[in-house]
Image (cartoon, rainbow, N blue to C red; front, side, top):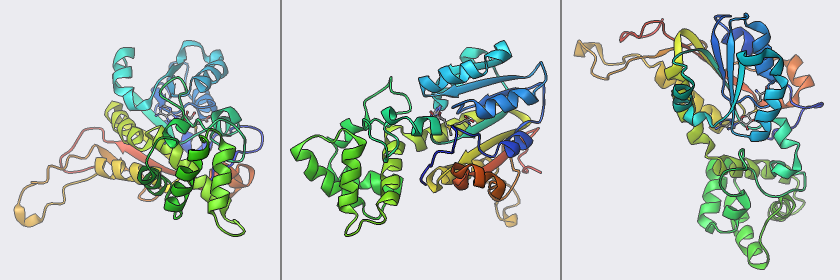
Length: 324
Ligand SMILES: C[S@@+](CC[C@H](N)C(=O)[O-])C[C@H]1O[C@@H](n2cnc3c(N)ncnc32)[C@H](O)[C@@H]1O
């Protein structure tokens, strides 16, 4: 749950597995819905033929600029767009791309964002309590934190952080902001330490859960994931794949629900003699369970420890009888 930055910047997580599972046609068009530092994107481009293309998105304008610079040597074959993946359906209509040959979602935030104190994602670094992926939209998280009711605060901490001390921390915040607004990561960290009880030994894990909850809430992340995955599934060509890497159980639960539903075959009792449930699978789960990073990767990249990958394959011809 605690996204620790790897040594030396952002290393693409489960990179070998991404390349192996994602690329089914070296001449195809690929979507990197979360281009971040373009680590995965660069490796994908290196695997594609001179006909292959990649379209990368990010909500974060800084990430877009960095990724575009990193991919500049691939020219027009690698396009980076400042966009939210929840609207990728309309974006691809604008771009005139009707079909893609693979889609990658590497969820959450990058180490480049986590390591930058100005973004407010890291509870250990002092900075403004912002936590927006796209600082050009909406308001910093501190605006909500200083105006939400105690009940709303507690419910966000509980729902999006699965935090057992959610009520106690919400109460502390409401009391503290009567004296002065909570505007920095340090102010919030100190409140969390105080609420963590005598010794406060577990405050680090509590802070990680509270910051995760604020990030998920401020960016409406869970709603975005469900919508983005659905849009990507619609764009996938038959036989091509959706690869998703999640880092906590809330993200993974949505990925699991969306992909299982997309793979659902008819489960009407045989006695009915015909299907009444309307199941129309869009493809199949390539693996029943999540794929995890190899030990050799987590040794060099601690952030990979939490990673879990799911792979879905669109069926070549939609079949009411189910996927292979
Ligand atoms: C884990 S990082 C991706 C790292 C990337 N795979 C790499 O190798 O460098 C996740 C990225 O997704 C972006 N992001 C989060 N939510 C998004 C959304 N709804 N639409 C587009 N990008 C989003 C974040 O800004 C962040 O840069």
